[in-house]
Image (tube, rainbow, N blue to C red; front, side, top):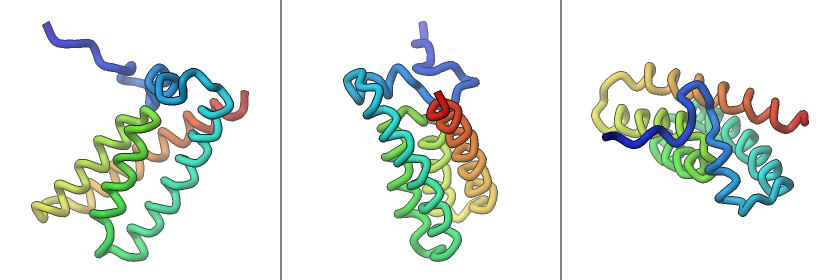
Length: 114
């Protein structure tokens, strides 16, 4: 029998994963989430400004996203890496990454308001 997903499919963040990564430190969770939200925006802007670096930037974003439990962002970044490597559908992959980042940032904003 397959394992259940780590996070509900409708959630852009796996908060249980984040809690494990921060050892349950709520202040650290909030700090890490805020840093990720800012980093994601900077990396997406850099991908537009320096297209030749998009693969490396997507890889960096993928690692950061996995660290905080933003698995949809990590998957979309991996998809962009694949699109760059294969030369197929890069614009669609970048759009999917931007959408995943927007969803994660909205979830982060809601968390940080509390």
